[in-house]
Length: 146
Image (cartoon, rainbow, N blue to C red; front, side):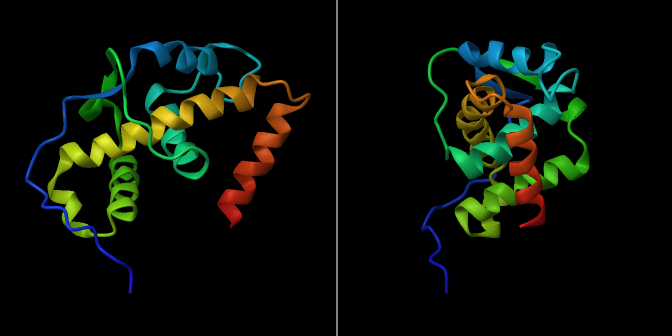
């Protein structure tokens, strides 16, 4: 049986906006605005969710440091299924459904995974590999099928 963390969760509401480190805003912009990026012209909330997933697999949680930047308004941008994914990541991380009552923590977990994930993702897309897009596509397909 898996070990549950002995954390008392308090009922809380998430912040109005989803936050990133201000210094990493340019990474999101590069991925969205450079035509060579597979994330060219995607919505910020979609890219954020991909960074959460990539961070969970490749980087782990990385606390936000320094100045923060509101990436997008949570309630206006996220679809119900996207919120469900964020909640599922928190449940997996904490290994208990009790975490869902602490909405601030749920989104903090997502922000921290995205914080680590965006660095790795940006490096993967714009890194030194000759064919980063093909490599990334293979990784994504492997994760989806696995």
